[in-house]
Length: 57
Image (cartoon, rainbow, N blue to C red; front, side, top):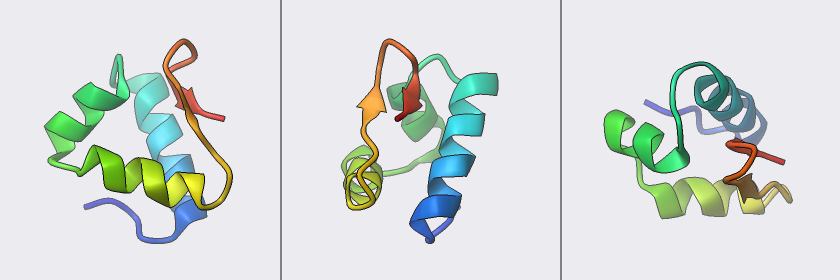
């Protein structure tokens, strides 16, 4: 289960993307997470997924 707090979600996702997953798609598929909901939650705090860096910036 993903954290509900956007800042905790940001930290959690960037750690997982850095250490375990080659892409956001792979992370969402493995964790059965709604990619669009994840993106929307982090866009609400002005973070966007950068596929080249494989992190939210």
